[in-house]
Length: 393
Image 1 (cartoon, rainbow, N blue to C red):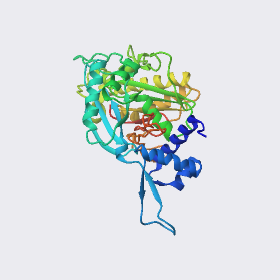
Image 2 (image 1 turned 180 degrees about the horizontal axis):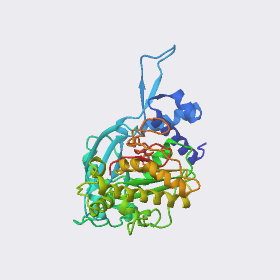
Image 3 (image 1 turned 60 degrees about the horizontal axis):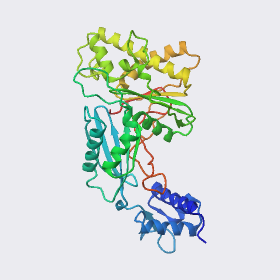
Image 4 (image 1 turned 45 degrees about the vertical axis):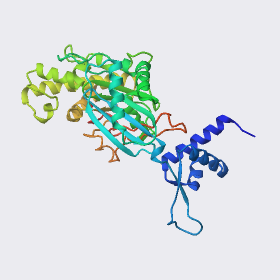
């Protein structure tokens, strides 16, 4: 009796997922995790062993009597996964085996002015160079990308919209070049997924990435919210409440630098705004930034009603500086403001307690199909809202 093919595939996926999660582990532990019968586990382990996805490793030193326990593990030859963080200024490529063990990584300046085909070719070459030391086949590429990239112009103009990079054409272009399945998501969504992965109690939340460009993500009932059109989440086009400035003009690194320079601050990099403060003109810039923060939080508070609002990215030190005043203004204008907290870096948790840093490198398939979507872990801030954390672009 052959049974149900779908059920057999599910059991196999369940066994592999458990091995990936806790390897090396014994068969007894595997039975406990999967809640499958001993016979079923033995059959699926044998199938996975023949496919090269699982190996048996015996240990001589075991506690208790009886024969030594056999431990199941995932060999490096089973393949590898690549994670890409494509920022407006820098791009990080990280290769790891199926257990999430780092193999190698590379951080390089992001290509400027490239169209879809050029960017896909550039990323494919970068993946090939980074994975050269890896063993086994490339199982999947996971890319977290900003919704907008620099257009390569020499002037300080606003970056053009590049949401097309998050669409099927770019995914197909990259898949054709790396010869492996590709999963694309926005960097804001990826960061928020990391928070949701760490805290299953979060229902509704919003996240802003304040780096070279402003990006936004939200979740409803613990699920990432996706809009019907590319306009969804483009909060940067809204007016900030400061003159004719948009939120993108004051909550992105490029926009805030331009605004600071227009106010008389001699800055070459936006980081100097908090590392080398200049009294009078700086106060006007900080005031404008505070107003934009309040406007952004108010906009999502009255439309999405989030429990928490998170801020990550290059401008996080400035967010932390203005948090007290922003909270005060929000308490005056909103009946109930989202919960607040702050942290300078993704590894520093100030509310409610210090916790281990979520590591986006821990990518591994979530099912028995090695090409299925990995569990992406990204650098995130404290999961108790209205928080700030710095991250690379």
